[in-house]
Length: 512
Image 1: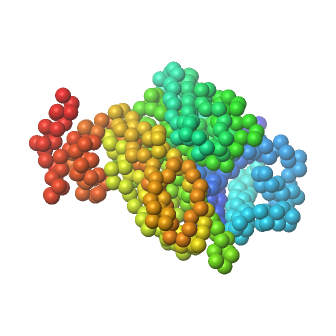
Image 2 (image 1 turned 180 degrees about the vertical axis):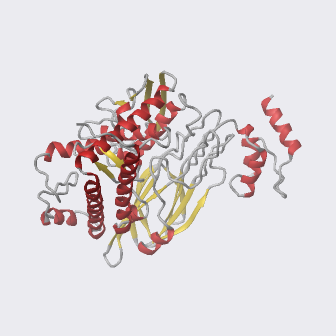
């Protein structure tokens, strides 16, 4: 006998599942040790049913979550008949039997530079799982196993129905878009990512045929991650009330040829695949802009920049800094892009300057928005960020992974691209520009400055309201000269007010 679905109970169960995963996420923030988790919030949390289907996801890193079903499939394949209450599985390092393996813990401890933080972060994940277990059992006690399963199935079906209903309203056809990662750090060869998006009656096919072969660097994206980034890109332009669960994924087919950067063969390195994921967002949104142009923003900053620095203090204490710098949104169909905000695929935060300086031998000399860095448009792209670091330790190794130095964040509907990335290194009083991806040994007093791109512009810049341009000038977001060149708006350098006659004449000349 099928349990009938009551709409009120349905809403209560949905809200309860959403609350459980958010409680899990908050537990991680409260108990994690490393800045990249507790400050940057580079983690995710989700709840799956016994079949490995994701029934709820927390407000955490969107890039991760679409890969959860594939991860669960792997867990179930290996341990389906050998899982007991209290067991924990760590991907790549499984613990069996519900008892902490001292041997595995010691292996981890002896193979990382800051074991207290790594083991602390693992403990935070375990605590989050315990919170999820506790709260989910409360739900089961309230409604029973059969009823809860019925409503979970209904929730997945509901998300699928809403997704398919929305796709039915989209124009049918094939829509292609190509963007590039600048290079892989080993050569200057650009790395193309191409998607052909086919809109069927009620579902999508995202075909990445034509994308780059897998590369030597660790930028290769596993198929599960490629699917995850595809799902989040489509989900980001759906209605807000579509539940965030695996039902959405049912309406999206992903094709990525084996041996490419989006589905590599072993031993393709994957540790830095997040950058490829950011570009996948830009690629899929570029195709979707041809389908639903009123919903898709111009390209954002291109994903976060990862700056890592590590070494030993004079007291022989190891330190590791992993700073993720993000970012800016592109101009939107009806609003400017947002300054100093995480990439849409992330939900991350920048590490506070005070935390970096208090816990590591480093000084932050500058942390600021960069004037003129947003792409010009009827709606301006968000401004890029600048961070400058000075090493206060005798020595450290610096690694920096950035992009959008050659292929800039694109504009849409006549909007212009944003300003590119710039990395400036000063050593022994000599200043030089650096590539987007590099590693170097720093010494005390050396500085590295990173200028992140802004977001692309949306719409013709000469259609931007001159008063909006003047406001940007007064707020030091746009210079007087850039206002003239990019927007055709003449600003009095003393009063910072619009010269209306000169502006009309300049714009008329340009359009004529």
